[in-house]
Image (tube, rainbow, N blue to C red; front, side):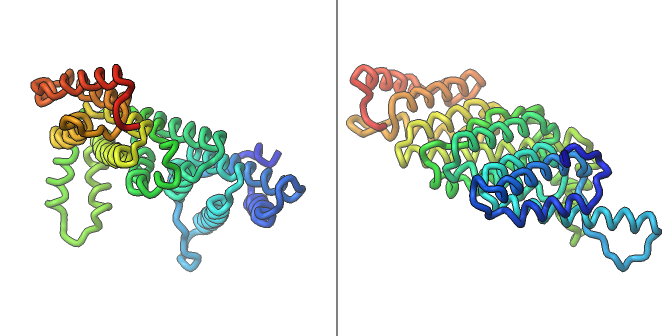
Length: 352
């Protein structure tokens, strides 16, 4: 019932609900107290996603002299931000399924508000800590929906960036599943490679002309505001592509070293989708990785199985269709394909 309150919900109700949640957060399962914590937690997620503004807030000084109406508004914003911060911190420390469900609701419903980076990092981390199939499925559905409904790519860029920086460390906690890689395939890229290059060139040329000592992030924001939405989207997309490449390269290398067939295939699938959006230098690095996998000396054991090698051959073939000369002119790819067929006839050959 409390979750159905309108946008003018008063602060005491929020504070009371947070208290219900925090006071019973460590209650034993299937008790009255745990039920109170669960209902309060889920109700708060519904209320906050309904009443939070679509912009970030900052704590205001209580000593600054302002009009009565402004002071009243600032008091309300301070209380709202303080209560929300307390709630999110509790969610992050709470491993119960209802806390994860609430975090997912916040990621979808409070994308432009404070602490969204903390919410995102917590969900990604939980996906790699052997969650239940239901919890992992919920997190993956949330990320997929985020990637498909984030036109400016701000939250998508934040999510992919954190995943890139923590991928190998997180992967070691859950090497058998390679969670979240499938969700990255739902990222839709709208800007062309030329748009991305133009946005980066604009940023570099304008940044060099700004006054020294200015905040770099403020310079970036100013330039993007001046150049419009298209440049911001292109720049975000360029950052996403770079991070995706590093994620897939790290995952591919890790999978080959540890002979994880499913990991190789997951990474190759992602590379195959996004390779058309990367520059020639990245393609060259990618080809070197594939050649190490596919081109072996006589009698040398393959690092991965037939299916993974065939996936790599298919990805290289797709690059050839896109106009990558080294793939089209190299006989090594055809030789690798025939060797895969020979291994298949011999029962799979070396590797996994």
